[in-house]
Image (cartoon, rainbow, N blue to C red):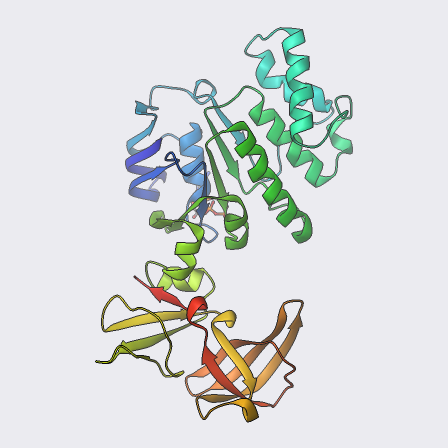
Length: 340
Ligand SMILES: Nc1ncnc2c1ncn2[C@@H]1O[C@H](COP(=O)(O)OP(=O)(O)OP(=O)(O)O)[C@@H](O)[C@H]1O
């Protein structure tokens, strides 16, 4: 639905996006996350799509239509930025009405649409509240309602949760995704947080230095990152070699693991959840290590372990203490196969 074709965006001589050909929002993916580290060009891409930056070369198309001749306010795209950018000193209703007023909708229609949107974003009855009196989470819901009010063809969310605290971020991420799904609005959400991307999106495009390195569903992305950089960016702190022998067993320096490899050798990405640690007495003579640090998380203990391949992260379900000797085992369903 949204396509960039050999797109280049630059600030003066500083080229941020070069030769980018990318598509988002196909029929089975309503919400696409644009995920990448700080400074990789996510906001620049979103701003170019919104019509706020003029491409130096290439094209951006929506539903087949070249957007170049269409100014930002005629694209029918809704935009929400990190801090919402509401009109301060005005009411919630006045903010949501903005895009409807400039489209000259009737008063009755505007009032009805405001009521409907406030129900949708779970702020019923807040019409006459001044936006300066809202909490950060409420302000972002109003910004979302304002963006959705004119029924945009595409919604662009640029780090909509970045200014909120962690606990609120997760719940609002899920809520925003539900709201945009309820309206059926194709959405691109920019984030540098892969947890947030997974909570919100059907598909994730990973961006690195102005290029999209992989687009996939979240589960596929975690299990099969396109390359080592992507694996590390997605939380695989350790990357190791694996090789498959003639009888199909896959060997690594952390012992065998029951996974399929695309060839006879591959690189595996490991997160703490990929390596299970258990007290060495219960262990059957495999790889062992020494516990260097323990963090007790609600989901179990997370460990830093001195292993034969150096320091690695691991997880333990039982009780483990600093200095313990632990047996290490790779958890096949939690191991990422790089470049599969
Ligand atoms: N208005 C501007 N003028 C000049 N350079 C800019 C401008 N906006 C962004 N840049 C530069 O372009 C590059 C990409 O920035 P951009 O904001 O698109 O990245 P981002 O991935 O959205 O990062 P973040 O997550 O930190 O917002 C950075 O090097 C940034 O310094």
